[in-house]
Image 1 (cartoon, rainbow, N blue to C red):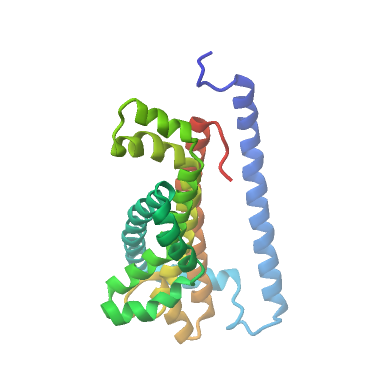
Image 2 (cartoon, one colour; image 1 turned 90 degrees about the vertical axis):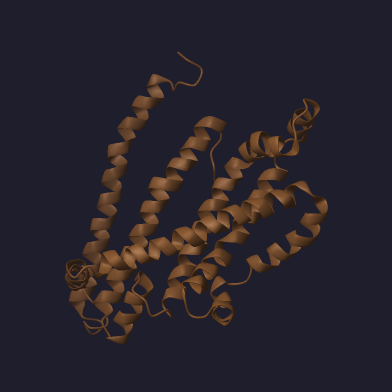
Length: 270
C-alpha cells in the first residue's frame, strides 16, 4: 500500500455510509415539504401571503418558460464572480501583509477588523455616490462584503505557520516571493479555505441585497418584482433558487476544496 492511499476498510465504510446519508437528506426534505403543504392547507394565512408548494412551482415554471430565471441567474452570477474574484486577490494580499509585517498588522489590521463588523449593505449608498447606480456599484458592494473576512482568515493562516519553516526557506536562499509562493500560501491554505467560504456567503448576501435596489434583470430584481406585484409565490420561488445556488456552490466547490485540503494536509477544516 502506498503512503498516500487510503485503507480499504475505510473506503468501503465510507461507500456504505453514502447511500444512507442521501436517504436521510431526501427524507428530511420530503418531511419538510409535507409540513409546508399541511400548513398551507390549514389556511392560517391567506393563500396570496402564504403560497403552497404547487403555487411556488407554477411561479418558477413561468419564469423558466419565459427565460427570465436563466437570464437573471446568469447576470447575478457574473456580478458575483467579478466581485468575489477581486476580493480574493485583494484580501489575500492584505492578509499576507498583515500576517508577515507587524506594522501592517497594527495599522491596516485594525482597520480591517473594524470594517468587518460593518454590514456590507451599508456600503451601497456610498457606492451609488461614487459610481452611480450601475454595475460598478454592485460589484463594489460585493467586494466590500467579502474582502475583510478573506483578509482576516489569510492573516490567521500566516500567523499559524511555524516560524521554523520560513526561517528554513530563508536559510536555503529563498527570496521573499519564493517564500510566499512555496511556504506561506501552502501553509495557510487550511485557514484560507474557511475564509473563502465565509467570504462567499457574505458576498452572496451582499449581492442580493444590492440587486433589490438595482433595476436590471437579476435574482434580486425578480424578488423586488414579486414584492411589487404582491406575488408571494414568486418571492418564495426565487428565495429557493438563491438557497439552491448557495448549497450547490458549497457542496461542489468548497466541499471538494475542504476534502482536498484534508487529504493533502492531514487535517480537517472546521
